[in-house]
Image 1 (cartoon, rainbow, N blue to C red):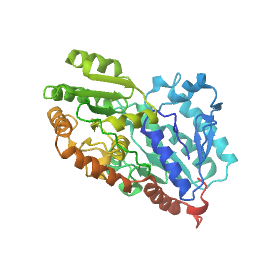
Image 2: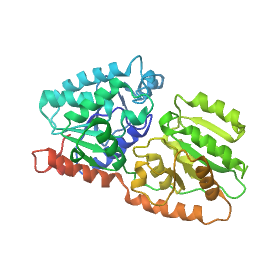
Image 3: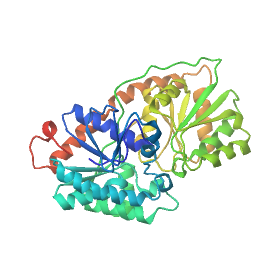
Image 4: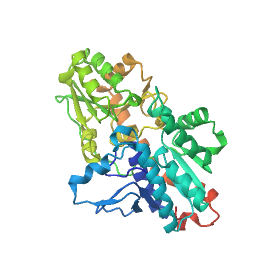
Length: 392
């Protein structure tokens, strides 16, 4: 299996999804050799054989952590000199790794690893599964990178099976790359089974409105700020937290000043999962404003903590959850009204959403997703007992 990142060092939902899926596959009896560009030894990966295609470092070398955390599939300027060059290097190394491994299926996650998957399939004759967490037209809706589109299209066309994380994503694949619908199966993402206890901030504490995500055009953080401005006109006892980083951060900080709400907005930068969990326990509501959202793991994370969620109508996660508020990402008044309705004192809406959402996500586990994936492995492999002895 090829991926670009793995918890605890991740830059977005792709790494979190890979981590959750790998743990679930392990529990279901599937053996996985997971290949990333570089691996940190000493982090205790007991759910897969994690291999660094381009090298490795030790966990006691904190000065080198930037090497790993810069392996971001979302922006080429954040990965050395040229992420495309690294993708090609990763592909070349993948062939050598594949020749040393005994495996049945090649499973590649997102565009950064499709080249590796294609090369291994062609060199070793193994079936290829391309797992799509987003496409370039989602990540860069205004100006998709033609080179990335070419790599992405090649992987999707060569793959024996394509997996999309939502029906929304499947439709985007069909429309933008001409892949036949019957070649694309949908497996929605999941969430870890553990449920964290909620901490009630109390009536005298500020009402925390939370945004979690990369600060890029795809995630629409500017709409969050505009809605914050509108909501604060009705209730000044709110604080808005933007957890994440990205190329729009400087612009958003200036925007908060221009809107006159800078004192009510906190930019935390990128947070570890541990710190995110702490923020979720304090949040009154979590708002997703993505222009394009193939899935939206943030929503499940928030719901797991019992945080009411406001989602774009088109988000992939909206296909599998009911206990949330849905608006259009561009509807500033609608988003603000939702925020005000949830955080208002002495109303039952927040309590109902919190209770029902936390219960709902207990069914949306990674094990559920893993079992669906194993059935696809069955179809791709000639072996009969893939679930208990798979090597992929």
